[in-house]
Image (cartoon, helix red, strand yellow):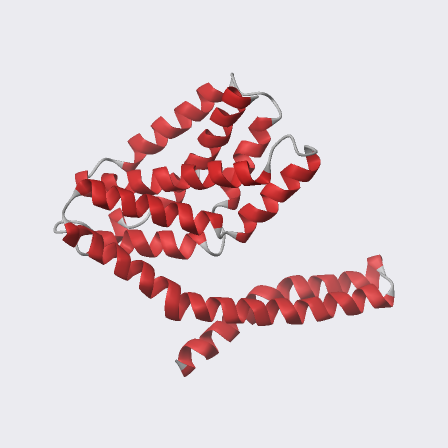
Length: 231
């Protein structure tokens, strides 16, 4: 535990210090922000470092092991519908909890003046992620090539882009991007690695990765379909 705490603290410092140093250099050379704003920035840096440190410790000692444990238990249940249902539920739940998704949905709600409800947008994004996480589990079981699924997904996106209202296309692609955030990524990755590690003939390296790439397709398709149907 002590080693995890120390290693995480070092990771956080390495991640935050480059941008902090860059801002400090700019402050004393070009920008010269008011002193109170610069002090607020420094306080914010300390708070971000503390928050990231606590979050990453939680990920390493709690979220990752739990995700791998859930993934490892799924094959033992046998029934494919059960595996699909649990994978969908996990993908849906972590997306609803993803801070990046919440920020995007509220920004879209404000900019669109309420015409695109943040609750509806979060729900559509979460359903898209849940569906493709479930499909990723099916891919691991039956051994479908990842390239085929990615090609099919992006072909659907390309076709939908010609029929989707123009204001939904950029929102759709940003919706796919925000699902790769600090909550969803550890859980989905751990789920795939745990799932593939207990299946005979499956490699955690070859089959356990790629879920994030597949999961990010779901929200793009979901938001485009929402635009076509509702608007």
